[in-house]
Length: 299
Ligand SMILES: Nc1nc2c(c(=O)[nH]1)N[C@H]1C(S)=C(S)[C@@H](COP(=O)(O)O)O[C@H]1N2
Ligand SMILES: [Mo]
Image 1 (cartoon, rainbow, N blue to C red):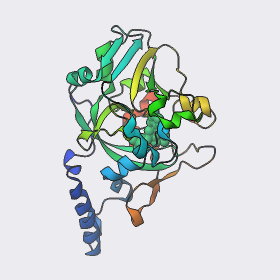
Image 2 (image 1 turned 180 degrees about the horizontal axis):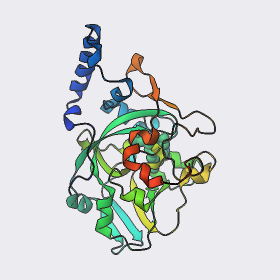
Image 3 (image 1 turned 90 degrees about the vertical axis):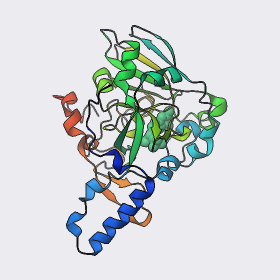
Image 4 (image 1 turned 90 degrees about the horizontal axis):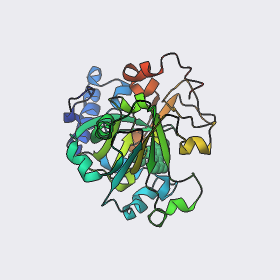
């Protein structure tokens, strides 16, 4: 598939990880030598991807517990082979799509995206994957489809967190069809060129970089094309706090905290807060999807 979206970072920025660390030191050193003008502006600096360690040990995957360290501890028990995705609803070719067969049809590319959790922390992740629109073409979207509903695996004997009614399992998410078809909307199958770890949503998870992280549903087993807005887990749990759209928006606060800024994960002593960007920095690409919509009402 031709690339329909131009990354603002080059793959050379990603590998190997050691290069990042060295470059960070170089930037710090250069600043010390009075070459401060070479240092990137504060917000752009966060586009340096987080480390593998940060991305794979600080997670939200409530099926394995609510602590950020639970998924790395417990998600290893999730069986990811074999894996298939049921694609149904308003599609021409409904059925169970084996993950390996899906992969054989897709061209994997790298996408370095900002990732912003509704809890006001953020990372930058070098995903590997394919555009969700390409998966939809496999199944063939029918006229009349307006939304896409997603479901995560629900297997209680492998998912200790599902013993607690934190959410109405299985974890469910949804997008409007035009959001789902947007070239930024990715199915991630890897990170840093390696298969995606279970705690990050193996073997395939959604990534919608202009929306709060909970929209990026993990370990997908079902995709349904519908003509009505599907129920979604966080919205069902606390509708006042978690809307269906959940676009990153520094001007619309969460009822219990500000969304104007975010804590950048990593950097140890150097961890910092930065201003949150409209649509998480993807405003030019996605703002037109919401022309004429009141973003405070459709939060
Ligand atoms: N199935 C499922 N998907 C999920 C979640 C979850 O608890 N279960 N958490 C969401 C939230 S709140 C965030 S911030 C991201 C975290 O992704 P990461 O752990 O890969 O950083 O996954 C999202 N997808
Ligand atoms: Mo999140």
